Image (cartoon, rainbow, N blue to C red; front, side, top):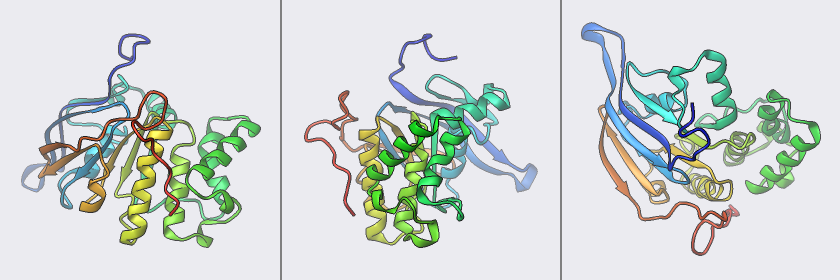
Length: 257
């Protein structure tokens, strides 16, 4: 159920008391220990923390890829753990976009075909699908690479294709797990700048896990996880996107790198 039957909640993500443990007894790993936070619509929130701090586990719970042992998480007013499998699949397909460190592109498909896959799954008409693919590849700076396959693209270009694919079904929430982890520093910064730009232009809320201090400066807020607990919530002072999509004062341009 959505909040207020048609009303639009100010918060896109509401996590309350999330616990997740793997294993049992003396070998149990307590990945999350009572994590609570909210993400407002239009925010780009970064998760930071060392390996094993619980970042990926938290993203999996928010994205409906896993369920908490205790606590709740709501996405646009919906609790993924309370849904049946088909409804949960529909939630992930229609309202959540995923970007992974490993890109996850299908090698035999072109960039355009990779971006179009989520829309094929929704049976979007071909003309509408092709127009959306063209728009998204232009948005991520790859208009001239539509016919190239992943092996013909650089790592940064592959990640741009992955971002375009994540946006294909116009998700409300974008989840990215170390999206720059396989990229060099300059390319990683360009990809993070791109994520920030598309959050503004596509009116998307984003939750991004990263360990790079330089990339954290581009977020609206930074949540720090240590041993499965949120230890800080740092507002960077950047406003969410303006209602007209301009990105607030001065607007936001898609980076050319």
